[in-house]
Length: 134
Ligand SMILES: [Zn+2]
Image 1 (cartoon, protein in one colour):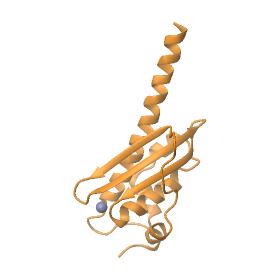
Image 2 (tube, protein in one colour; image 1 turned 30 degrees about the horizontal axis):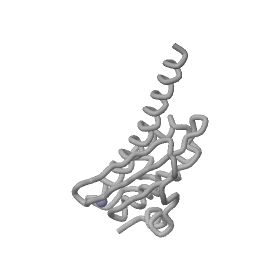
Image 3 (cartoon, helix red, strand yellow; image 1 turned 120 degrees about the vertical axis):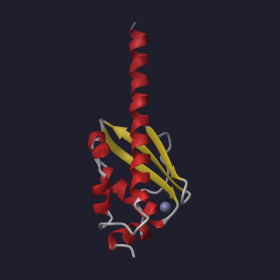
């Protein structure tokens, strides 16, 4: 039913957990299966220096979260944000079983929220600095 690449991530999920004091936090949930995926990221010099993920839910969600951490680790945030459904699907060995494609959506959504959270914090900091100067 599942491809070997997906099973590998299930058996040995990568970067499980939550970073303390992350630069970005994002969570996404899917009501139908009760899945929740959560990403925490640490950004250094515009690069994803560390990433943690937690997933509660079906097997493809857990595997997709793990695969995503491997795809973005060490990448620039621009590249991390540009990772597509297709990239993630490929990392899992191809098509997911019917009805399980939501795992891709969920993981992409949670990651984008974490990156957005980082960008928002950066923007706030920039405002503060400007206010201070003024
Ligand atoms: Zn699910």
